[in-house]
Image 1: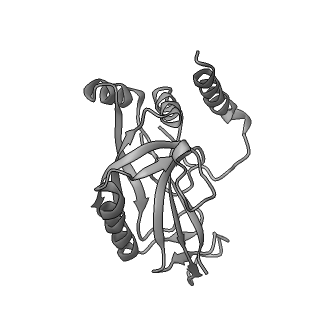
Image 2: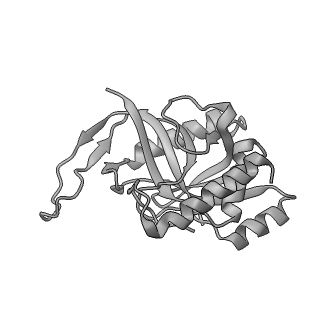
Length: 209
């Protein structure tokens, strides 16, 4: 049975790169990074077969990117539909580098896009998250007695919906340029300054400061 599958990658970008992009693109922020990774077990325990991701990336390119409507949201919705009111960015290009699916992302001038832009400018750690519908099957693996998360292989019925920017990435090795991935949803004391800074930026944008 299909379910909503959400998986995260760190998406890192330096403040200097953000400023250079804005200057180069007449005020627009355009960034490039890893959107998804094939054949690697992520921290949710899921493995995406490359042939499945290749198929879905091609379909997504033909159906959404080429029609200039590859929109994504800021923060992770629990829906299989992209909410236009929350759209923050548009993916303009995708391609493969080994098992990494690389994408070019244009941050939009929408309310959510402006928040995303300011978070990037402030060096806030964000992640890119794939959203799709599909089923999974547990696959046998030897974890050496470490008690690792059981591996679940995403099945061929997977359908890619969108890529969203989020604050809690969990897949190994893919923030868009600066972040460390984390699956811990608790606000650790040492990370409080990051969350507080994020909330302060959002509050300032909403209040027009």
